[in-house]
Amino acid sequence: MNLLFLMSILIIIISNIIMILSLILSKKSFKDREKCSPFECGFDPKSSARNPFSLHFFLIAMIFLIFDVEIALILPMIVTFKMVNFIIWTKTSFFFMIMLLIGLYHEWNQNMLNWTN
Image (cartoon, rainbow, N blue to C red; front, side, top):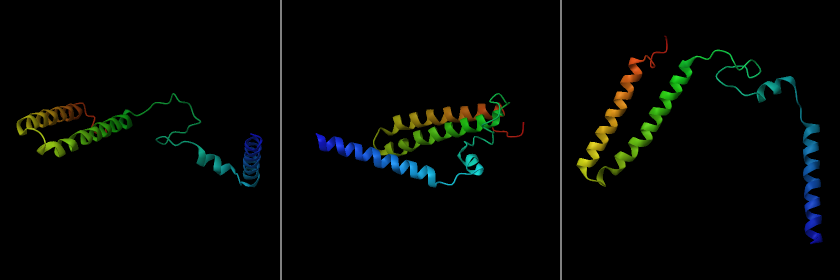
């Protein structure tokens, strides 16, 4: 029991010494502060969070996510082609593709795919 206690104290002391040495020896400058700041779509993180935001970034991100999920759903359909009944597979695939095309048509009508609005 004493050995375990002494080892844990030794580990804590060594880790604290290493942390203090890294703080003393590290070179920090004003430029490093800029590197550590988050970068989100070109916005300055230190400015007001209530600046107007272009919805085009949001719409493009949503369209990307939708098409990404579509690919994740279409690929297993290709793999299961030989495993299930052809008629059921065809109806399901056709229904899924029609839903995706209707969504794409709706996005096109709402000018979501147009970057210059």
